[in-house]
Length: 187
Image (cartoon, rainbow, N blue to C red; front, side, top):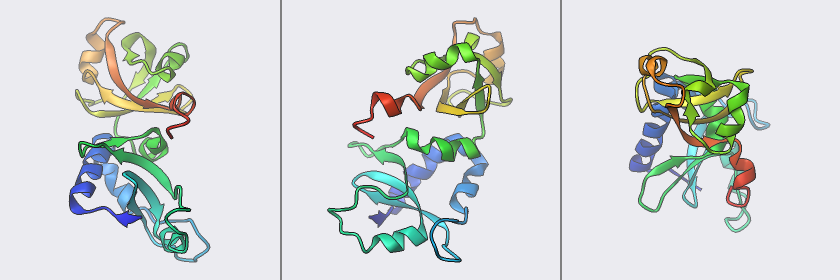
């Protein structure tokens, strides 16, 4: 495991900023509560085999005792770098995004399964939406009982959503918790 270099950190923060906005500072400055140390330190981003992990600094220090061949995962894998150098958030980052989301959409119970099968969110399927959402903003999708289901990007602004037809796409699907079952071998 190694720290991210400047270019990699820029890619990760740019993607997180899309979903969290000004709440990104809550992720970066979040004090850790993990580990036996009375003062475990902050969370940090580490790279291991093209995967980016969000992990307590205290646990990173303890992981130095584990050989590279034996280390499979440590912390929360929030995304991975593609072969082209881009960064893609994975579904494991959902809890981190949901706690700090800038824009949210709540789905009706009838359209939750459609989203969990990997389909986009249609206007007829969402129950509530946050104000001041613009096109291409990052959106976290919740059930009406405030359970985070996934995330994506806004296909329309809040005002456009209110005027479009019921079969119009509101949120482009990016990742959802159904991936734990669909892609369990790859996660």
